[in-house]
Length: 200
Length: 279
Ligand SMILES: [Zn+2]
Ligand SMILES: [Zn+2]
Image (cartoon, rainbow over all chains, first blue to last red; front, side):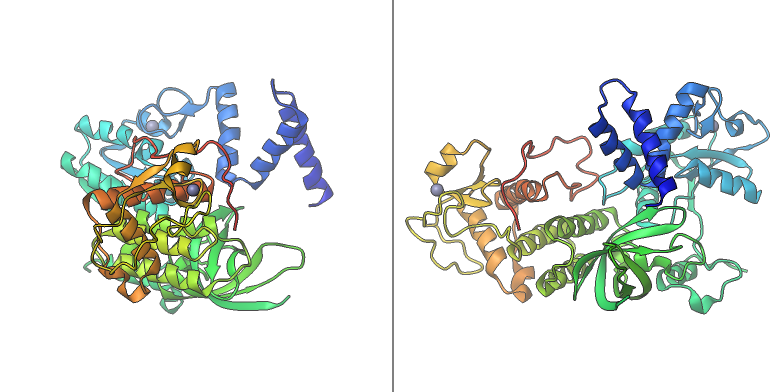
């Protein structure tokens, strides 16, 4: 650990010690936990602290980051109200926005199901999404969770529980990244991209 | 920087930093180990899907001086077990398998038997329609190869041989004269009745059939294991005993085997103190 990283860590410990009921040892343990924790996990804490101080919250409807009750996309009447695109994190949402290829609404899970870590449907507030479908305006849900085991588990689960609502449910296609040689694609990506082929 | 090569199975994969992953493998030659895959989360990463859980692969890595984390240089997929990614029941059964291997093994302590049991367990999940039974058998077999092997032939608490030693059981017939027993998760096996009544923790009942099943699961050659069946009371008792024991051995409740069915259910067995067992 370099000197700079060390003093950053000590700065965090000093801040934690200020909190009621937190001693030096606990502060060290918490600081080390945050240091070792997943970036997302640690930043969630930072985000949460920031949110309560600055009034930044999560959108009541789609759980995207919002400054009021609803986020900028839920408030925008020009967005296609019949489509919902489901993502794990707000950062994915903004990546999709930057692409400019989607004009519907979003739903942010703020996580993903994980049989490996015991993260279940309640942890990702799956019911919130179903409640939106009950309102009846949605015609299509696009599941854009990551192509990881957690993202797959989430997609399988959501597809199953959304079935009774009679909306079209689709999964974003897997495929070969643009500009890449097909021969360098790994086996799973290759199989998935052939399965997910489309007519020309 | 010595270069290491081994066949391996991915146990888990965690995001790390901006675009990296830390991956835990169970390797044939070196046992459990963790490595960093630089840039693994970038779209054009050379690792692709090879670092996802439940992938059977050939692993190349190198060791860095004074660093417990290896650097992963190349991963070639042998088997991806695609069905385990397409069905939640299979996925959570496989998750339990890798979680248990993770919990009962130490880094750098190879055991070819554990490797084969894991590979065999994932394979049998793929081509069988009872993931819960497959996982139950896997857990018994895996524990059987570690210092946590469930004790069934003498009292796990006082060591006393059982008065009438259980006769050799035919693999498919349950002998009527074999009496039921008490399973103590904290003692790591079946206990005699005086010990059972004295134990401060909760013992779980095992009927004669359940005890016979547990013994067969531990002793049968791997090739015959798939013929072992358990239904009704036997299944429920052995599942409860093994689930509690796994909780003790792992020192925490592992995510449930039946992931979605377990939503909102109370744990079978709560453990508040640290287990008195070690490898
Ligand atoms: Zn919103
Ligand atoms: Zn005893």
